[in-house]
Length: 198
Image (cartoon, rainbow, N blue to C red):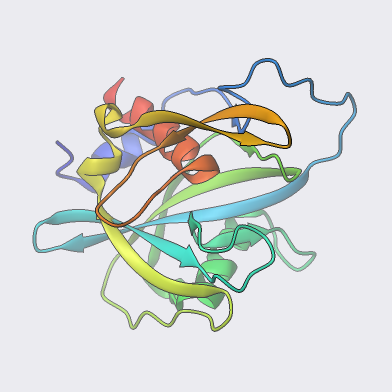
């Protein structure tokens, strides 16, 4: 049971290993000297009447990459960003209209390597007040929330697989209602849930 932001902050302070899209596929041989681009994603936690919730987005079905998938707001670090935390905050402001001044950064998780060549740092934050959610047109179809207790419970995670580029690939999922949360988002949340329950 998660009943305070302090529990989240304490868990983020514990040691943890980096993760990747390849964790469940040890047969994949990654090229030596590969160049990974830094990125940051925001895991915004909000207080609702029934407890703490995590905000997630459903990507636009018109996007070229990962259309319709569930994701954290976030993206690659631009030249103008001081670091990946700044990138995550900027992207959350652009994608869902989250004002900078309402966000308290709680901490980060170790980076996650994606199959698309990014090293993504999950940034957990508490949103102190309500705000008008404004999905970015063409990028975000929907913004929704999941109870934090749901994604913090390792028992809610499944390992599934599908064929990708001629090979069977395994990945984590953490379904919630009509939302199929999988891939990198689910892997990062699973690493966080392990931290919360350790």
